[in-house]
Image 1 (cartoon, rainbow, N blue to C red):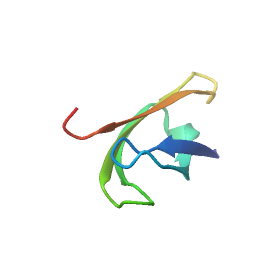
Image 2: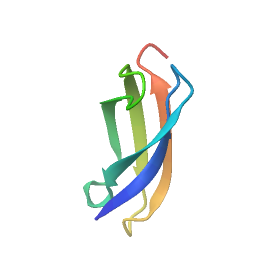
Image 3: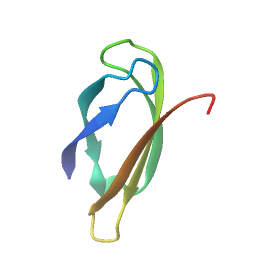
Length: 62
């Protein structure tokens, strides 16, 4: 189940839309910012019923 989420870049401060696959459960992955192209660590938390619980972004070195 794909869902659009709004990600906030911790480098440039801009926000952009991205898709996450909720059927894959909790995820931690790297995605490049759509604005400044710097890498962002994305943390996705999913409930047992494939409900999106939260999305966090941070710089790789944080």
